[in-house]
Image 1 (cartoon, rainbow, N blue to C red):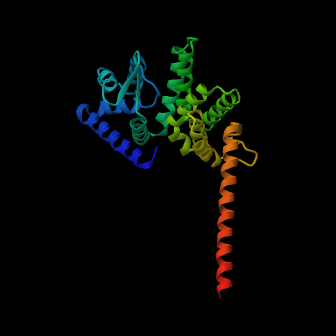
Image 2: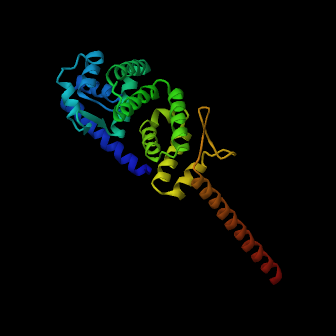
Image 3: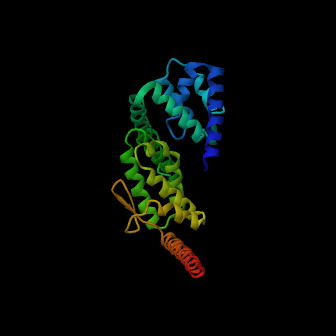
Length: 264
């Protein structure tokens, strides 16, 4: 995503948030700020957030947030916010309530998913994992970066491409707190993997090459992440082509100089 697209999405998000605040007022807006913390929302989860953190808002604010333009329904009683909206709301949440509130929300969310998301079906387990990582991303980014790296290491080695894509997308969703804590290489690695899974080998190699070490691995939070052989081959081929082009350029320059000397 280029910078122009990001700026446009940010402006749209700002208008949505301002429109919501203007329509409903400050207590509703405060609930929206807190609602941005979980990666996914259900009516029950948001009701618990309201009761524990924003009781000054009317109880109807729960429905107003979920049914507003800030959220979109992605499943049965399951809602999400756009990344741009979520990031802006979380920044404002931190500005108004401080890191302590993020820590409190993190503990709350971890307790909530431990009690409520206990089914063994894969979808529930994936949601629980995503919510846990969300809680940690804003409170213990180094820990969650390591857990992401370990999960990616396993999936890449086992060539579970659908899981690689899911994890890489989740890292991108939580990019802001991870990048702020110095884990941009993890984001770049995931962007490369997403391009690889989608068949964009050249772009994947370009991105992975930015964070590749001398042993052809990517180091994240003490975890050595593997790189698919196809990407390494493309990286090597690109380097060879670049070197050949450079040598050809030097030969042309040398020939031109020799010609000039001969003319003199």
